[in-house]
Structure formats: C-alpha cells, structure tokens
Amino acid sequence: MAGLLMQRVAVLGATGSIGGSALDVIARHPDDMRASVLAAGSNVDALVEQCARHRPDHAVIGEAPRLPALRDGLRAAGLPTLPHAGARALSDLVAGDGCDTVVAAIVGAAGLDSTLAAARAGKRLLLANKESLVLAGELMLQAARDAGATIVPIDSEHNAIFQCLHGREAGPEVRRITLTASGGPFRGWDRDRLAAVTPAQAVAHPKWSMGPKISVDSATLMNKGLELIEAHHLFGLADERLDVLVHPQSLVHSLVEFADGSTLAQLGLPDMRTALAVGLGWPRRIASGVGPLDLAAHGRLEFEPPDTATFPCLRLAREALRSGGTAPAVLNAANEVAVSAFLQGRIGFLSIAALVEDALAAIAAEPAQSLEALGDADARARRHASHAIATGAIA
Ligand code: NAD
Ligand code: MG
Image 1 (cartoon, protein in one colour):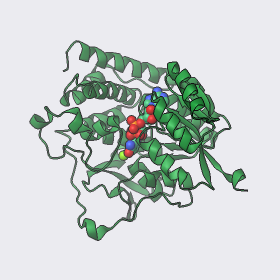
Image 2 (cartoon, protein in one colour):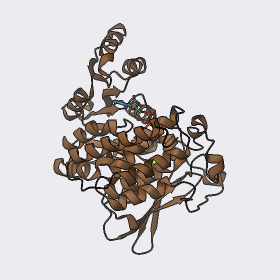
Image 3 (tube, protein in one colour):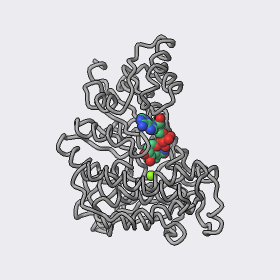
Image 4 (cartoon, rainbow, N blue to C red):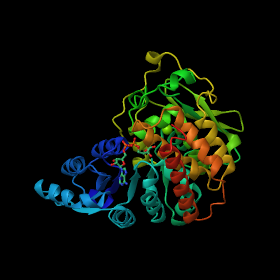
C-alpha cells in the first residue's frame, strides 16, 4: 500500500546545499517518499555517491560530455540507476511520470527551463531557484495556475509567509509583508572596509550554511532584493506593501501584517530542512531533523532597518521591481556575471553593485510578454556586464 502512495521526488541541484538538505528530509520518511530523480551540474563523483545512497531511477548530469563518466560510475557501483545528460533530458524527466514532486534547487538562471517544466507539468514544485522567479515570475506563476501546480517556496522568508497565509495568495486583508534579513557578514561595515572584502570573507555567512552564489548575494544584500521580487510574484503584492527588516539572529523568518492589526510570524532555527519538510509534507507537518527553538537561551531578538546607502543592491532590486518588464531579468543576469567574477577574484566586492547599476542604466526596460524577450534581456545584460569587466571599465 505504501508503494502506491509513495511520493516520488526529483531533486535538481542534488549535490548542492539545498539538494543535500532535501535528501536528508526525504530519507527520514522511507515509507512515504523517495528520491526518484537526482540531477547535478558537473560533479559526477558526488552524484554517483548520492545515487548509491538514495537509489533513484534516474540520474542527470548537466554537462553533456560527462555522460560517459556518469554511466561508468553507476555501473562500477553496481547501480540500476539510468544515466542522462543535458538540460533537455532534465526537463523531459521533470515533466514525465517518474516524479510527483520537484525540488528546484539549481543555482541561477540555469535552473529556469527545468523549473518551468515542473510548473507546466502540474507537479508539486518546491521552488528554491529564486533566480528563475526573478527572471520569469509572471510566466512561472501563470504556468503553475494553468497546470494546477502547487508551488511551495523554499526560501526561509517566503516559506514563512506561505505558512502564515496557509498557502493562499495575499488578498486585500494583508496590509504588508515584511521580509527579515540577517544583514549578512558585513552588517555595520562602511564602504572603505567593504572595498577590500575577499571571496572567502563573503561566503562565510554568520547564520546560514549555503552555496557560494547565494552567500555572496547575502553579503551584498542582493539576496534580499531578489527576494522582494520573488515575494511580489509568489504572493501577488505590489512593491509598496513589501518591506525589509534586518534581524541578525535569523530566528524570525518573516512577518505578515493583516488589516485588523495582527501580525503573524514564523520562527525556527536557521535550517532549510524546515522549509523543505513543509513542502514535502504540505498540508501535513512532518519531521525534518531540525531541533527545537529555545528562545530563553537566545535571549534577544533584534531588528533594525537595512542600510541601503552602504549596500545599494537592495535599492537596485526595488527599482527593477518598480520598472518591471525586462528590468528584473537584467538585474539578475548582471548580478550572476558580477558574482562569478568576484568569486574568481577578477573584480572587487563593491563592483558587484556597480556592474548591476551600469547594466540597468544601459539596457532600458521593455515589456516582457514572452520567454524570448526575457531570454534576450538576460543575454544582453550578460554581454554588457562581461564587457565592462573585460575592458576594466568596472574593476
Ligand atoms: P549550491 O551552489 O550549493 O548548489 C547548486 C546546485 O546546482 C549543485 O548541485 C550544482 O551541481 C547544480 N547545478 C548548477 N548548475 C547546474 C546545471 N546547469 N544543471 C544542473 N545542475 C546544476 O547552491 P544552493 O545554496 O543549494 O542554492 C540553490 C538555489 O536555492 C539557489 O537558487 C539559491 O538562491 C536558492 N536558495 C538557497 C538557500 C540555501 O540555504 N542554500 C536558501 C534559499 C534559497
Ligand atoms: Mg532567503
């Protein structure tokens, strides 16, 4: 009987931080769910190791030339898992009948096609890949509505709001949503100090253990900017009703204020397994492995407004949200190029915001009715930012 009701989960970005947390939660419920598809970008060894542990039906490696290595690795481990490679194979598997639930945890715009494929196929979509929402939020939400897909946000803030709203959109009874932000590793720093920040300092987040790209986004506050745009799409709220509040303890994950003056919040330890368990179990509550919250031991909860003069990325994201159309796609693409250049030591920390601001100024926002228009804006912004880095215009 359990077999018939077994939830089959595709974990995309399985070898990453969110992917690992998802597999941890899934493995706690062997009678109710199992990983049926695992996908990663390029690390074949890590993927094969996960296959040995979780026994999925399919494994997908993003980089096509690594398919023979994946096939050999699975065979050497004596696994019946079928090997696949490339973005097309991944989208086909996600849309096919080998999974009911998709954990979309690939980092960056590279995750757009597979995330959209899950929405279009009406799957339960545990959406961590926030860049795909920033890039194509309207199309994503429309596809999910048309196909009857349930989206559960896997971002601690949006998952908190989802819980406070019981999975519904924010209607007129919601006065305001407040996203909390840890403030990142450089909270309280001035721009002189920020100029000398190294990649190692930027990826060392005080409260959350995450992949390198989102860690840098948290340090610049671009992560909170992307989350404003994400919240706008997920909950259908205009930018005036979305606020950001810095909360260094990262225990209150966001707040929803209602017309009657009530404010609901969701609290918990900073561990993404809670959000993943909400998504995997919804509307039931299931074990996640996350321990209890001892507020007396923590003692204090502090709040302060964000410093957008020192950290301009949050302001830039809000402006892109107001401009609408292709502006968020440009913001996201320029940021991806800039973060990658920063992690490679090619530009300084402050140049990340400068590159994004420059791309937004150079590429005028246009209406974005189609995926093609958004893809075009994404490509233009990538070229623009790469050129500014290569020529040393912004270093
Ligand atoms: P990560 O860098 O740890 O993992 C990224 C994963 O994506 C890896 O498994 C990698 O192999 C895979 N990948 C990259 N390119 C790919 C491609 N072209 N095809 C297939 N797979 C590819 O990143 P992460 O921290 O787990 O974050 C993943 C996503 O979740 C990001 O969009 C991030 O913003 C979001 N998110 C993460 C957290 C967190 O706590 N880590 C919290 C909220 C949201
Ligand atoms: Mg978040």
